[in-house]
Image 1 (tube, rainbow, N blue to C red):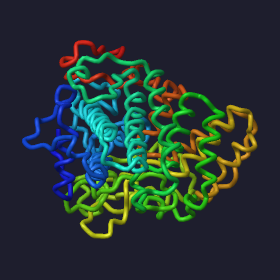
Image 2: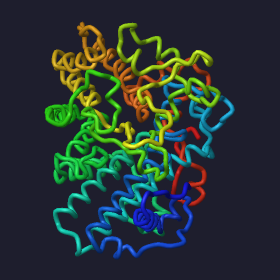
Image 3: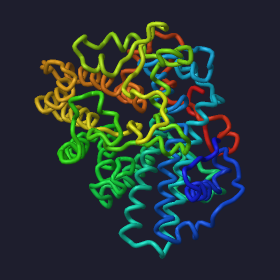
Image 4: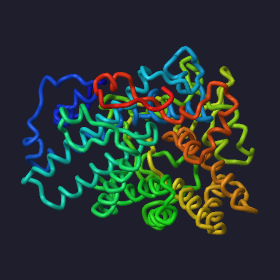
Amino acid sequence: MKSNRTIIKILLALTVVLHFGCEDLVSIDVPTNKLVRSQVFDSEQTAISALTGIYNQLYLSAFSNGSWNSISVVSGLSSDNIQNINTSNLDRMEFQEHQINPENSYNLELWSSAYNIIYMTNACLEGLYNSEKIAPDLAIQLEGEARFVRAFTYFNLVNLYGSVPLILTTNYERNALVEKSSAEIVYQQIIDDLEFSSEVLNPSYRTGERITANKFAATALLARVYLYNEEWQMAEMLSTEVINESSTYQILDSLNTVFLANSREAIWQISPIGGGGIATNTNDGNIFVIDPVFSFFASIQLREGLVNTFQEEDKRLANWIGYNESLNAYFAHKYKIRTSSDFPIIEYSMVLRLAEQYLIRAEARVYQGKLSEAQNDLNVIRERADLLPFEAQSETMLLDELFIQRQKELFTEWGHRWLDLKRSKRAQAIFGSDPLWDSGDLLYPIPTQELIKNPNLTQNDGY
């Protein structure tokens, strides 16, 4: 497990104490110094700093940091969006070939880093519940943010692994032996957390930057959750709430401004400041952008099959896709900065943005028979890309175009394409001709190390 790096010493100490105790659940070194949790939550400032430490840790955690072993990369490899240039990295190749060994180190880091974040949010929540030194309004605000982060983390776990342990305390002795909970139970906890967050969080961002959760971040993620659970009416209603908040959010005409820090299309972002070092670029930019001079360092490229689906006039082709002549390779160019140490920070890693909410509402409306309204939502995304409005002749045509636009709009973002292929049952059509493909590949394996530590865990089918 990577050691924590934070900008100021108090955040380092607070992050360490939130780690302490989870070593029996995930592989993590015992801290050499720690603060007593009652002291961490003995003042409002340290309580705020504890939550800041969690947000910072999202930039360091494997599953969420946008780097090599993040969901954006490994689930992108599992889909038909990106592929390895460097085929010598066997761990990454296993994701691309749908042959993930349960001992795969990237898979272990996905799992353990997510549960590390969950442990930290649980520790933060317990500290808030037990503290008498924090004003009630602030305490409930911080609780809403922590529960949002926990829900976000469980959403990724349940979609990658299916049934997973549902851990809501810091009792590591009990947690070390917990059995898997069904996806339905995990989803209900996600919904409970997000409904609480959307009710108590303010519409504004606590720090003024879009790197903390607000009411609409919780609402946006909840809209996605209901979409995945095929509760179309709720998905439509919640995405509409976000879309209607036009004083805060906007579909930007200039595609090159979408991924800037605090862009008006951003609903929630992760800042590189969480890395604690001198680098101010996103990991997404560092991984996906191929340097024109040092192209031999590149390891990831876009699949030509994806690039070829873009019409020539599609602005996303010109603005979000780059080409490296020496490698004859296309690359994702949503983020423009590959390396930087400059301030102010220009780009933040995008997690939730407004374009997805239009796509969520369009899909939810299709399944409710509201084809004209769904078509209007879809055309917001098409017309921003400089494409002519789409006129659907049937529900099937509209759904097909919707998933095409989801792929073109959200490629290299948070494994959207992989999850879309799974939930829409389109994966077989894409990968079925591959003799190595099996329906069991839709879920990643539970890491062997976790099965050894917890005899009550069971492996997913097919592994």
